[in-house]
Length: 214
Ligand SMILES: Oc1cc(-c2ccc(F)cc2)cc2cncnc12
Ligand SMILES: [Mg+2]
Image (tube, rainbow, N blue to C red; front, side):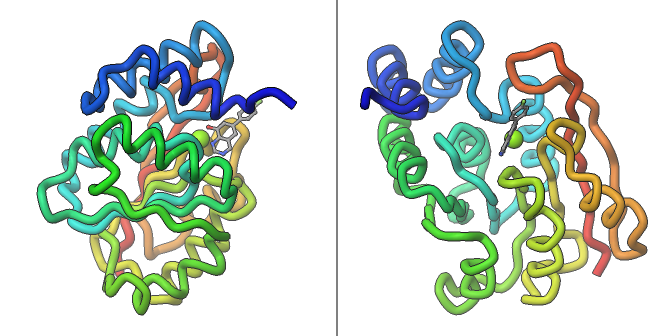
């Protein structure tokens, strides 16, 4: 039976990162996943692009699709102003549990709202459930086949406003070709590609920043 990769990452963080210190949690995850075993965190290079987009957007309402161990959730939470709300959706209950423990170790569990379930089921419930009108920033980092349908669902549910920013991980590796085609050709988006490498590897990847024009 043994442990799972997310549990091994969490145990390393609990052992090696100072509790309450979100930056030491972030670097502990990067240290473990670059030295011991690869994991699908956005990583430090693409994470710096995410940081820059959060800082320039100064979002009040943030949605993350795909929590995993909570690495990118912590990077975002660390840069939000007091009063901002960060909602993260995770369909795998085990990943969700690990992420909650990760948030606790970082001392940010009160700053993050994690919902367990499929994004397609949860997105239509967000307005009613969480009393949220629109998202200023959406970080898309879940299954690549869900990027496009979930983006259309966000539009249909009225959860985007003119100026809302979508930032999508892995648009090159593993790739989200239908999503890229949509945001790059739709008159409703202004899209920009940021080349980078896949987390912890020399493989090419990149993130796509798309501003919804309303
Ligand atoms: O950042 C990511 C990377 C990969 C991935 C897996 C295998 C491989 F060979 C290359 C890349 C998969 C992901 C799934 N969800 C969210 N993020 C992901
Ligand atoms: Mg990713």
